[in-house]
Image (cartoon, rainbow, N blue to C red):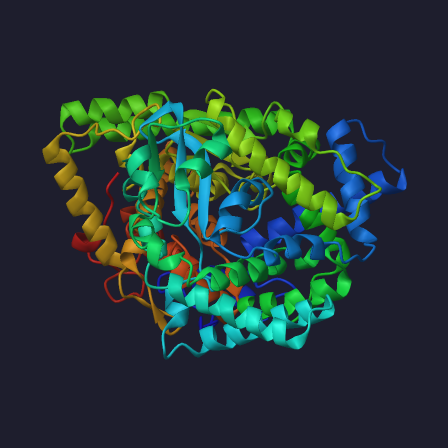
Length: 630
Ligand SMILES: [Zn+2]
């Protein structure tokens, strides 16, 4: 447990800033976290709910035709009429008799967002983003990570029990008999067990170059004796690609053991149960309550979110881009947009200067790194235009919520496959304007700062410059640093995976990366240990980002170093359930917030001067152990 004793800034920056808050903060019943990021998100959602309610009641007029459809969906989700129409879809799975049936229906299942034991997606080709590529991966485990299946993991066992119970309750409620119900759930869990030794770990997925495993179309076809992988591919993209990119080679090397005539019943049961669990919230209110029991156990909470919150989250997730644009336009002004753009420009320039002063890069590599900064695309607030995809999102009042949502999800999947023949659109955002988050995309070399994160305590025109740089400044520089983290270092200025390093420089980078892994690896947190390799990219970005934000802030008039670090510590204020902490330690590429806050700050020499930290103080770290790659 995090100690909530009040303490000195010299001993524990995180606790000194957040200790008092931690003592009294209450985790809400329907959400597993409270703190700076989640609280902002709660406020954003509250605004959106109020606006949707105003639109619905006619207090506000709806100007935009896509928002009109979103409001119709919100209305429908609020006053849900229950229906058992989901049974028609469950029966589409249940009526399969053999693998031939599965092969015949693969296209239908894919294009209508049914769960399948393999995933197929179209994205830009990681090595040449002017081209699209067909990517395949394996199915996901029921529980968040392999570690939950360890013999001594009681949380995992309890979760699977809860999952099974929820699935059984839902099937019974839909009128299936008890024999069918228990057999189906048991077979589904058996298939989940089969996945266990062959799926990729979160650490594996965090290593981008290893996701890229091209294979010829002919060889891809040979990966299964039972699934017609070539016909499947052709049917989805109306084309025969020269190569397929496999995300999980081990999974596809074991495909014959996983899907064959003997395992067919398990595959079918797994599809049926997965489909049901994914869509149960759309059936009716009692079903949403049942599915919440599993979710609550997973997240360590005990309340079900109110219908209004649920309706809002469902609507915003489906109409994420248009609602993000709406949010940004209404709540984030043009002045702020200009000001943030100015901050980003300043930070990029300082980053450039730091690269020029860098002592371990050769001239050739340095030139390429600076080119990455020059070509970096900056996205602030919200996108300029709504994707034409949303013109196809028409809500039909004659249909149930289930039918509408399922149809929209199907359109989304079909749109993704259609992209195979469409040109690459660099202006597309990968985040919505209402998200309290920020990102760097190595495949486009762009940084994104949605409107929702551009508010207090991260940013405000009325905050001091020191506060803004300790807040959003460190976030901006963090995202820029991702261009040069362990993944970003493999992508060039156009976002293509290409080596732009001299051999000697890359070796040096790898040894610095290893030091970064070691700095966090094995640290005890909440009774578990941090996996240094899982979190290394984020730590590289954190430390490079904070150092750069600090340098820019120092050049501003009236800079106050204490205020800068206090605001940095405020960014990471968080209180979470035990369950969410356990889950994040297994799957999250970010280090736990209190560790991010303190250790990254300890890597900065300025911290010691600002707070007069001595060897005997808790925040002291020997100069030789302070790290920074960028
Ligand atoms: Zn990051």
